[in-house]
Image (cartoon, rainbow, N blue to C red; front, side):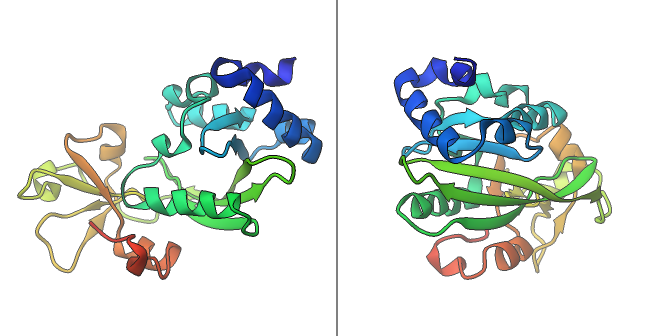
Length: 218
């Protein structure tokens, strides 16, 4: 069947069970037409379904390696790195375990525009799986002044460039208090030896109370 085509490569039997459950609870037509990025995770947090908006968003941002045919069957956390990885693991697992649907705001900016997204996570009623819907809240030109990608300004004594996992700003090396700059050149051509932490603003605003549970600046 056409609606299962994206999932055949990974585990046809499991995919059909989860997709049948999904489309009993949510209209396939609505999900396929939704401009929000929608995807389904199984109980191992592997991608089982991506709607067409997933592919459009990947193409618009030059991420051809994240097209649905390349990521189905892979753990969604492979697309996440740095200080927020365990936060998202905990969020997904809590909803799988029976927590109420959960919402979370996050940045997903490109070199050209600032984007604020809202993620909503729902547990399917008839299968151990999650529907995740990522909707665009704000898209606008960057408010931060752009800095030139001068690596010497940002590379630490250990040879590492630290970028925020959430807003994608870059931390100046050896400056106190911490100073984080918007360096779009590092998104176009990432420097070598990048480490992902989280800036103080994102930590306090988007992940309140998480410092004590292990989410920290790097």
